[in-house]
Image 1 (cartoon, rainbow, N blue to C red):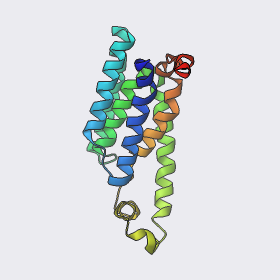
Image 2: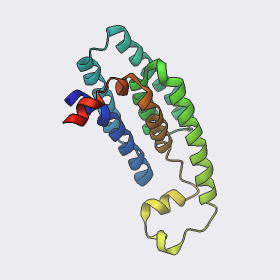
Image 3: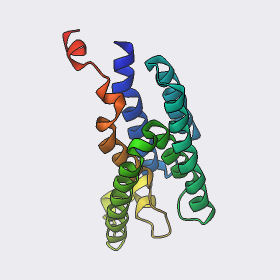
Length: 174
């Protein structure tokens, strides 16, 4: 029961927190990525994931981390975004990695276009007092890509082995 609850809540809650944090502060704490990595490790061991599968998930995370830090070095993404993408890749492994990256890219493109349009309009005076909204509206501010990473992850997560292993019938009876 605890394992099923952790599978249902841990990853989605941490990804939602990362998205909200990026929206309101334009930062994603290292603690979120570390919690995702630790949560994956604990759940993988508790679920009886094979050593080979575990290493393949780690390889997927390492690959994304390497590429994402290259993008960070070029100034294309933030460091928190790079670490969050790698932590999500750790959970998805290679089986769902391409779908995750596709969804994250599509939502990221839509978010970017939406924010570029939003930044063309004057910010209503009633909203100008909100520091997070003023920061989001500023043209020199980047894109809170953690939102797109989280939405992409939450789109893919129900299709993963993590969710398929949850015994919803048993949870419903309790």
